[in-house]
Image (cartoon, rainbow, N blue to C red; front, side, top):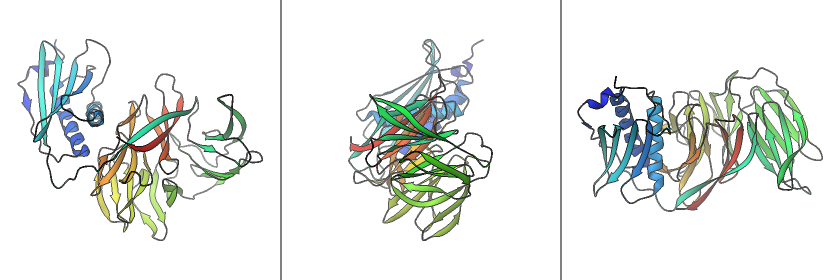
Length: 402
C-alpha cells in the first residue's frame, strides 16, 4: 500500500497575495505547510530540504524554513535526516514583481507540487532600514541540572566569576586555568512546591544579588563570601529592556507563567491576559510592550496600554534589548513549537509597529528553556541538549553588521 497516496492527486496552485515582510513571507510559508500536510495524507517521517534560486541573504530563507518546518510539525508531520525517506523540497524564487514558494512532495517517481506567491512591492510596508544585525552565540556553561539563569560577576578586587541559579542552589564559580571551578554554593530553600518546568531569574547589582523563584525570593551577596537567605514572597518579577527596569510582573501561583498583573511606574497596575514572558522596547519616545500569551500569540500594547497589534510567528520566550544600530527595538524571540523540537532565537526590529527580522536565526539542537536580557545588547539563552538531556547556557550578543 502506498503511504503517499495523496500525492497522486492533481497538482494544486495556491496564489496567496500577502504583504512582503519577513513576517508575512513566513505566514505564507505556514499556509503552504498546511497544504503540504493535507496533501501528504501520511504520518511517515519526511526529509525536508530548502534552497533559494534568487539573489539575496540566506537569513531570509532560514526564517521561511523555520516557519515552514514548525507548521509541518504542528500538523503532525515528523521530520528525519534518513536518506531515502519521502522528501519535501522547499524552494524560494523571485521575479521583478513576486516571490514564489514551491513545495515538492514525494519520491522521484511520484512528485506533487504546491505553490504560494507573494508580491515584492507594497508601499504600505517599508523595507527594513540598514544596517542589519548579527546575533552571535557563545557557550558559557553546561551541566546536568536545569539552569534557570546565570550572570557574570566582576567583584571589586577579585577575578571575574560566574553565578548560576538552578532548582537546588545558587553557586559561585571562579576561572582557573581556562576552566570554571565551583568556589561556594548556597541551597535554595523554597516556601512551596515547584511547578512543572520551574523558572528562575537572577539579578546582580554590584556585590548583591536577588534570585526570583516560584513564590520565593532569595537575597544574598557574593563577597567576602557567598551568603543567601530565602523567604516566601509574592513580589513581582522584573520586566526589562536591556539594563533598564520597566516594570514588575506577578508569577501565577503554582505555575510557570505570569498571571497578567503588571506594575509600572508611573502607570500603576495593569491587568492583562496571562503570559509566559514580556518585553518592552522604545517606540516613538515611549515603551512598546510585548507579551507572549498562553494562546500562542504575542500581544502588543503602546505606552498608553492600548492594544497595538499581534505577532504570530514568535514562541513563548522574549527578551527586550536597548535600541541599537539605528533601528527600533530590538526584541529577541524564540521560534514557535514545542519542547520536542529544535529551537532558534532571532532578533526582530520594529517597522511601523510591525515585527521584522533583523538578524538570521541562531539555531539550537533542542528547546530553549530560558531567555533573559543580560545587558544593553546581550541575553542569556538556556537550551536542553536532546541526546544527553544536559542544559547549556549561551551568551547571545547582538551587533551591527550585515
